[in-house]
Image 1 (cartoon, rainbow, N blue to C red):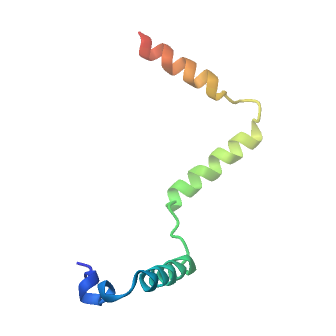
Image 2 (cartoon, rainbow, N blue to C red):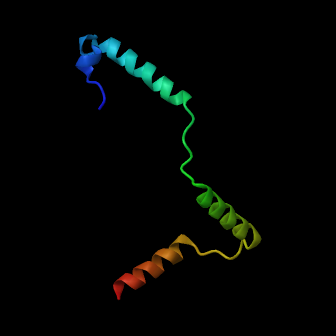
Length: 76
C-alpha cells in the first residue's frame, strides 16, 4: 500500500509547494523508458503483417467497406 499524503508530510506543504513537488515527480517519470507493450510474438506478427502489406499494397479493404460489411451483418 502506498503511503498517504499525511504520512509523507505533503499535506503540510503550501499549494505552490505541492504543485512544484508534483512537477518534480512527473519529470522523473518522463526519464524512465516506456515499457514495450509488445511481446516478442506480437512484434513478430506485426512485422509479418507489414511485410505482407508491402508485398501486396493493393490487397487492402477500406474502412468504409469494413464498416458497411459489419453493419450488414448486424442488420440481419
